[in-house]
Length: 148
Image: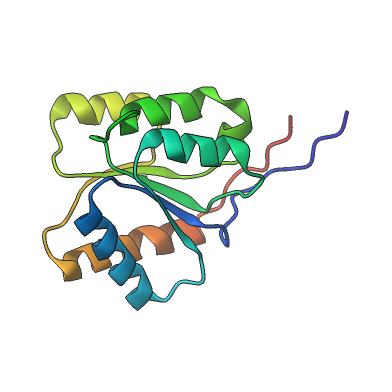
């Protein structure tokens, strides 16, 4: 059976898994100002995001996830994504954006093969600067071509 090569979709949606409405508004404003062509897709909890990632043929460009969320937290979501070969092979960068960086959470996150752990900046300009650096890094980054 033939499987096509899979490579990071740099034009795909930017997925933000965030249960705080104020943070969602801030992310929306930042991405509007940055004017990237990628669609921005929000999910309020990990279960919604997992259903989207497993049920769609769309390949997101990048996932930004909070850790502390209802139903399925960010660490559990990442674990399920990492254990799902179909999603894992899409080489979707997965980054945590959360309010604190407790050592245990950082270690746990990196043990799930995340690509970054960031504390949410307090100001709009700091968030904009951080997101710009992250997105532009991943736009320039090469990813492997996988096949099953």
